[in-house]
Length: 439
Image 1 (cartoon, rainbow, N blue to C red):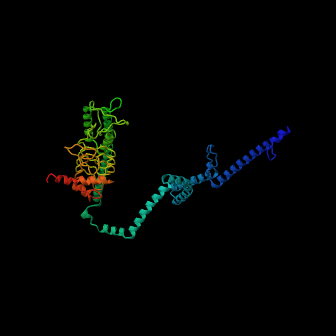
Image 2: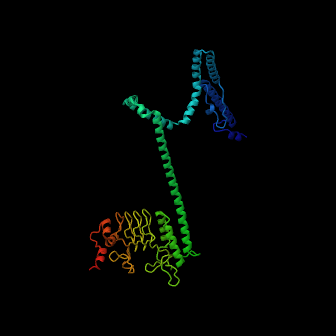
Image 3: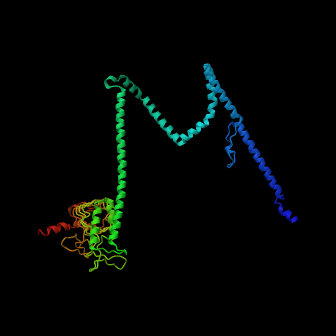
């Protein structure tokens, strides 16, 4: 028993029960002190906000103090004085009642007015509003100091109203002009909004058309196992669909179609079985390419002649042997695009990026543009190059030395005059070839 009593005592030698009773007494004293503090503040300030002294979970209670009752009686008495002065027709009594009512009512409504002002005009909005009012007043005062108001007043006093009609007529005319201006502005805004909505709707419709085209070409060229199995009639239908969609989409839509066809190798000449005509696998997971005798799934032909592809992304696209006469390829991204045997006669390549673009096979010394009567030689590059006569190459970007040599040799006078870096020291092979038959 003595051991248990010693264990029940704390380190200071005090009984735990006695310590708990002391804690309860101190908490009660704290509550009494806080309650007395609330009552003192309430008496001193009149109407006090007791919410900050209440516990968070306790319900808020509105206390009616003696000060509230006193102020209410004062306001009521002042209203009676005003009423008595009004009934007795004694203005001095009415003025006394008005003064007392304003004196007693204003402190009561000031907190409410302050709350409304904070809700209607927060500090930031109040600052902006006051700044605007101050700026307008400052401008008005400046106009007064420079004598503008006096000048206007003198002009109005000397103005002959009989000759120019009444002010009502002038105001009516000005109002009609203002209404006409507002009507024109509203009509213009409606036109702009309608135009934007039409453009967005056209984009959505165009994308749906392109998606349907992709799905149709995929189903047409692939068999049930997902292998490329195109027949002559299927290739003809695929070319017809491609030619039709090129006439119904804008430049960005054409670029999307070209990227899809190129990455799907539907524009690449594929090596085919001589008997069945089916494409042959190259043994590394793809189809074998045959530039000399291969057959394309889709032959672009003259589909891109005169088309506008400015500012489009045509990287890694296979445009070989396409007829792009007078096509607009300005500011196009043609990085690593295949332009061998492509007809770029009078094409606009202003500011186009031709980095690593293939313009020919073989070397620049032996390469030459395509010919109608000669077969291409992909080893030496003869008749494998693009036709670039009269093309606009102003500010073409990232040309290699071999590309510049080929363009200067076979581009003619216009290309030699517009190509960046010039063509000094490079012979004009196109002009020399045309002069040989004459000799």
